[in-house]
Image 1 (tube, rainbow, N blue to C red):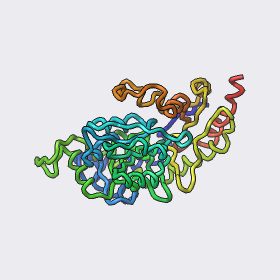
Image 2: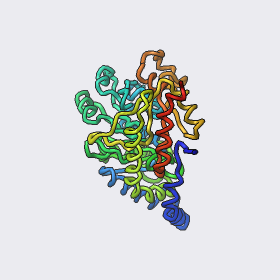
Image 3: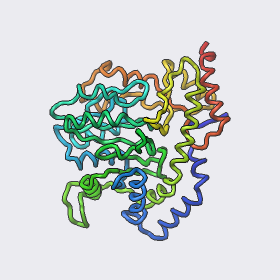
Image 4: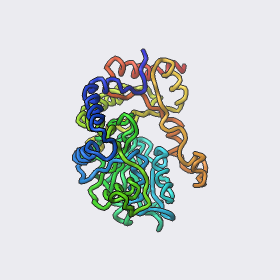
Length: 370
């Protein structure tokens, strides 16, 4: 049996007619930037997240960067981020001239360990970026309490968490502003690049919009040194088609995850923390850990099961961030995760037979090793 790591076919086949109609609608109007489709998607996604505003941008990376710029974070400032996040979180901080300060995660949730944040706060700290990694919400109450104590801004990196809930509330509305990616592989993905910012702060929303439109509040009037980062009409139209289906797609992912969490019993495999009422995971990926990760990966691939390593080299060990001068061994939890983590198939449309096949092969890994 061949099971890819991810597949868009089941999802897109169900809504193909709607996607075709959206494409034709945009083509017929011949209006491709800053038009009705983007405006409507922004309204609909803001309503979904229960925020006052949504601003469409070009990518998830841009979304974080523009939030930081709107908060006037720049040279000499420090921004706290998890040590095991995707490099885009750090890059957004670096693009402003600020310094990313890495805080270790919890080993079982992969999210930032809130008990370690305060020790990294200095007089230069201006914000904390809470990454909802893999679709599991970070502990936002604790993060917001710390931020209030020290007068810090809080930003959600919700690039992998469309529809995740923390204590009953959707991510995207749990901070000063949140950044989303609509990269095709996300739970709510476009058919190309795209991103968005959600917030209930009017000033942040207006500044993000202006900064992403060459720093312009109206045509040929530039109040900031901005950039070009806008969600185009075609991608907005596709996202409008997909948004009403998101809850159903997330529910299917949770059902698959429940089987993985219940039926994977191999003692060599360390499973992620289970979802709870307070942390409603949407399983953008399902990542296990194994001390023989590379052997497990090879074994699964040989048996037709697709896998991905998220992320095999932590930020502080990347050449791009050697300027941080963080020696190997300084952030042992991030390093341990990077050495042992492996993501297994998780996508809408996996059938019971395919899920069972993945489970059975993982449970047989011990015998393969012997």
